[in-house]
Every structure is written in structure tokens, then in C-alpha cells.
Length: 263
Ligand code: ARG
Image (cartoon, rainbow, N blue to C red; front, side):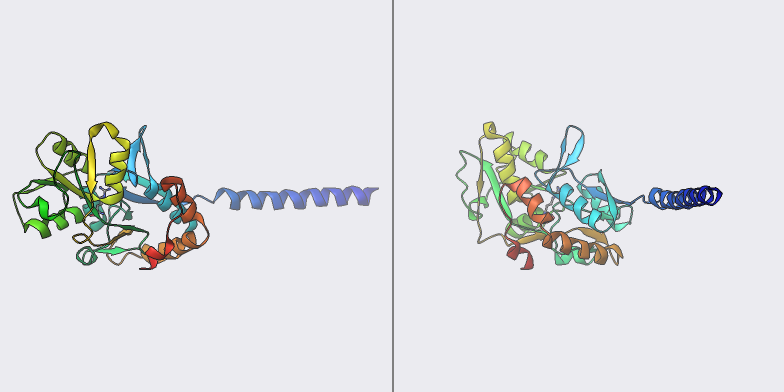
């Protein structure tokens, strides 16, 4: 009887100790947070909805960071501040439909490409502009320091007064609606989303594939960031395990063509 009681006490003690040690390892699991700078005025990639930053990029980047064991903390700092914040390592990375370009590669590191894009021309529905050639004597609007601005520069030359630069894409479109500019050059999916969300604004998109190349979005890091390699591995997993497909379908209502990402 006495021996049995001792045995019980022994087992109780052992399980107490075991539980205790399990507890401490459990509570130590706080994920490290990474700051992601963005410009949340670029639907459907990143935009504000009821005070929250949301969009395809938000879901995708959150999934990639989670796969790598990090928590995503998005900060809507605006496009130009975002570029500065990554350069100065104030942000760990930026995710904002950012096109991977050779020019930017001199200052930043990029992830693998995760989305194919190109430029489109937005014009009022009754506009006669139907190609880049038709822009010749026109005023265009672009978001400053974007590939849309670079495309406009290619058409009009550097520092042309026909190219009007805006802080945000919606400001460029608004200015077209007020008649200040004749057209806006912007990323195709964003242009199409704007038309879809604003059916009463009588805007149409003009495609000129001879003038605009394919672009690829990537996460943007400070130069020589250790993170880039680590998150690329996680990104590959998210590409391969169906998570990318799921998020893509959630936002675009169709399956992605993964072959565009291997270029
Ligand atoms: N893809 C273009 C670029 O990299 C435009 C991106 C603008 N993104 C935004 N969130 N405003 O220049």
C-alpha cells in the first residue's frame, strides 16, 4: 500500500515537471516581426479597406513570411518614403507591386518574380487615343518614380512637360477626370481594377503591346539583405504547395499561369 502511494506521488511529480517544461517552451514561441513598407493606393495589390491595409500583395507576403517563421507588419508609408525606407534599412523590405528593374537593382535587392505585369493607358471613354502614337501632343499622368513614369519618359523624352507626376495613382486618375491630363499610364491590373470599381467614371483602358514590355513584381530589400535568400526559399514553397494559387484565385477569380513566373 505504501509503495503504491509512493509510486503515484512519483508519477504525479514527473508529470508536473514534464508539463512545466512543456509550458515554458510553448510560451517562448513569439514570431519575429518584419516591417514591410508599402503604398496602399494600388488596388488590388495593396489598398485601404475600413482602415486596414489589404490586397493580393498583403496576403501573399504574409504567407511567405509565415512560411519563413516571421510575422508581417505592413506600414503604409507612401511610395517615395517606401523607396527611402528600404534604402536606409528603416524597413526590412517593401512589397507594393514593385517592378524588378536593372536600374533599381543598383540600389536594392529583389526577390524572385511573383507577378507578371505591363503598362496600360487609361483614357476617358470618349477619347480618340488608341495607341502610344496618339499620345504625341497630349498630356499624360503617371505615379512618380514608377515604371509608368519610365515608360512615359521613353515616349516623351526626359523632363518633358507633357509628363505630369503624381504622388499616388488615384491622384493621377483624378486629374485626368478633371481634364488636366489626357491619359494615365499605369500597371495593367491596377488600371483594370480601377475601371471595374468605378463603372460610373466612364474610363477605358488602351493596350499598346508594341510599346510596353512585360514587367515582374518582386519584394524589394536593402542591398545585401540577409533576408532575401531566406524569403526566396519560403516563396518557392508557397509557389509549390498551392498557397500562391489559392491566394491568386481569391483575388483574381482564376488560376495563375505559373509558367509566366519562370520567365
Ligand atoms: N510596378 C510599378 C513600379 O514598380 C508601379 C508600382 C506602384 N505601386 C504602388 N503601390 N503604388 O514602378
